[in-house]
Length: 217
Image (tube, rainbow, N blue to C red):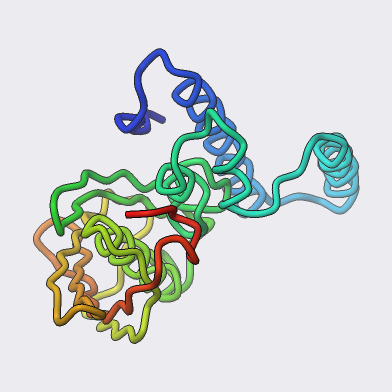
């Protein structure tokens, strides 16, 4: 899987670190997919459990990170914005439980694609509605951050127009518009080909950058 790392200098330690983490996340997503799609008998399940528990124990011996802000403070990991793009739940490029999400940023707008594998199935052959809403909320939140004002979702409305299929390249987009000095409205859409499968609208309430861990503006 090729993942964008354009926010880092190509030969930088940040790029090297996150490239490795993205590969690890990709391998873990593939494992998650096989755990869902494979018919595993009890004996094999027990053997696999032992192997995975061994990996968990090994990771537990390494230095642990207490959240996104702690990771950003460790140096050579990029800014808090970079770390959130990598490890935030639902859409982080290096998060092992996120779907395969790629995006491009512009002022007040984000466009991209997402592919939901069988691990994200809800209705047979289609994506669980919670993941549809989650990804839309995620790209709307990123769009709001790109306006220069981090914030929290104050209200979210999702319309499910058509079932979103699995294993297809799904286009996503979001655009932000300031309502006043404290609130931003963001609208988003998800589509497969010419068919819009879901839309969303959200109001984001701005928060103080320093209190939220982003540092000064």
